[in-house]
Amino acid sequence: MTTPRENLLSIFRHERPAWVPVVGHCDPYNQPSRDGMDPELAAALGEVHWSDRSTVTYSRYLGLDIMDWFGMAAVHVTRRNVVVESRTDGDTTTRIWHTPEGDLREVSRVCRDVTGAVSSNFTEHLVKHPDDLAALASIFEDEILELDGDGLARTRERRHLIGEDGLLLGSMEGTPLGMMFRVYSGVATLAYLWADAPDALRDCLAVMEANYRRKLEIGLQSDIDVVVGVDDTSTTAISPAMFEACNLALTDARADAAHAAGKLYFHHSCGLIRDLLPLYRRTRMDAVHAFTVPPLGNVTVAEGRRMLGPDITILAGVGQFLAGPMDDRAAVREQVRRVMDDGAPGDHFGVWVTAQPNRTMEQTKFVVDCCREFGGTPDPSPA
Image 1 (cartoon, rainbow, N blue to C red):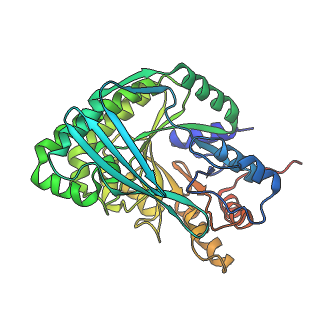
Image 2 (image 1 turned 180 degrees about the vertical axis):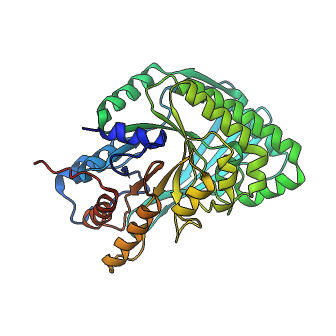
Image 3 (image 1 turned 30 degrees about the vertical axis):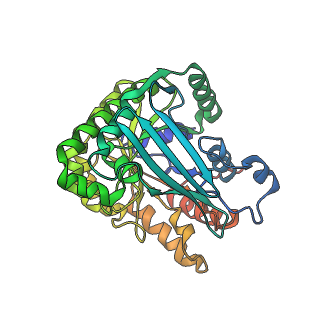
């Protein structure tokens, strides 16, 4: 009998799997409603935190394959000179970074929606003009990166917990360009820096990636199966020309390091990526993770398969079908069928079902059952 782990690995060897892998995901932003939830499941999930066991618990409850989003726990970071001063007032947190190249200030605010989901967004980024780039670079240059023995042990424990049910994902920073628009500068400031201070920007990005690569080298010593570069790449934030100029060689270097250590390398893109796929095809990444299909995304799985070619696996999100209206179950089922048909015969294709805080487990299970039906997943129920 093929194990879920063996079956998952087959799609990255571009072999036809015994069933289309359907994996689960649960995190603080993406977790199911507790309304009507089995009390035992609710107790097992508890308060969901990043890198906890919630994805394993959620996936096993639904009979899903496991891709557990864990992180690079084996990396220990300390600083020599940079000091961070933090102050919280209600839902707003202000941080002042005192660096050798001057002070930087950022402000973030907690957002709470009607479902109870909590997220945090920057209302003021660290980098506001070209003079801030040297200070940002000095933060990365100041860090001391070391192997964390306790982190190695925690990673080994999680790998043992998953066993043959799936893969352990070690998430790391996205590309420096992606981290700029997501975290350090925002989209508008990045556009101005790209036009007005290209040399200073490139110098800063190079310092950032040197730091990220060192973290990767350390993290690869742990028991993770996969490295995920969490880039959230989308043409809503950067152009294909920007990605081509900054990220092709960088992606290959990361992928090569992962492959040399016997790991896979995924590029996490959860935005509008149609115009980036020809560039992705030129890299040695193993998979586009969180491939976002319409109506949230702008490219179908069928189009993606043609544009990416046979060497890059698509891991498409279908949790979005839980985010929209579900009154018409036949329509939702048809949406899932279309995605699964687009991925046929499944030789480099899988789907993941992200929990949604506005949906019950009954509604989630409906989407999961549709995926299982059209993907040929074996029945997890005991005989």
